[in-house]
Every structure is written in structure tokens, then in C-alpha cells.
Length: 176
Image (tube, rainbow, N blue to C red):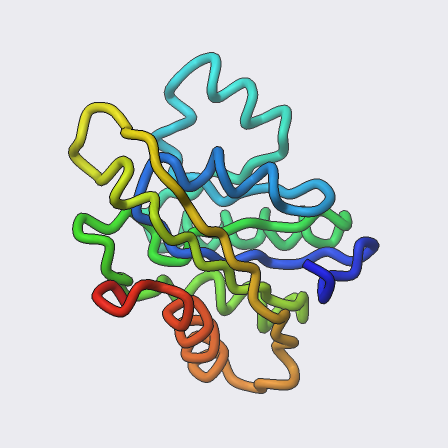
């Protein structure tokens, strides 16, 4: 956290294995952050209202053009000085393994020039895996890695590889 400038917006990119991830991670993000959220969650009335108040950005994962429009909205949020948090796999992993990353967040980073902070969340899969009805108690680790300046990497694919390497570096060996 000491590498994160308090006056700067960032794109926080994290792995995602559990419904515990967002409520554990979001309060740890310094300053205000928006989140790219699957549009289906906006169908839940009270939750939808809270997400709109928080400037969260809905993503239609089933339509490429609408997903691109969501990234444009995310860039507007970033330009307003609000950080963006993205679960780069696009969905929760069934087995705790890293899934392929969605490309859109990396286009967003390259286009906006906003630094990326990779984040590893370790332990939530064991506490509340996808498909289980209720969570169990336990310990979770949230690791903020060193920010990556997109222009220093220069290429979307290389940026994606660096973020993946950072996130994987703090996962348990059987998961990475």
C-alpha cells in the first residue's frame, strides 16, 4: 500500500474465486473506487440502487459492443479521478485456479494510461467456493502488488502477462 499515491487514480485488477472477494477487497482500496460489475446484479433492486449511487459500471458480458461501451464508461469514471476495481477473470473460478483474463480491462489500461495495481486474494475459495450455500470462517490474505505503468510495458499482451504473473506469485502453489 505504501507504493500507492493517495492522490492518484488506479485500475485495481484482482483474481476472483468467491462471493467474499468484493466485500473484503473494496473497503481496503484507498480512496474511492468504482467497480466493473456484471449487469445481472443490477436486476436486484436495492443492490442496483446502491451500485448506481457508488458509480459502479455494469458490464454486459454477452454482447461485445455493450461490453466495449462499459469500458468507455469506466474510462469516464477514471478521468473523474475515481479508481476502478476489476475482477479480471470476469467470473468466479470453480476450483480456485486462475482463469483466462478478459482483454477489455487491459485495453482500458493502455488507452487511459492509468497505472494497474495487481491484487491477489488468497483464501476466499476455501471459505466460500462457487456453488456452496454459506461461507465458513477462516483467514484470507489480500496482497497489493507494485503498480504497473502501462506505457512502461508498452503492449496490452505484455501488460496482461505481467498482471497475471503478479497475481499468481502470491497464490498458494496448488492454485497458481
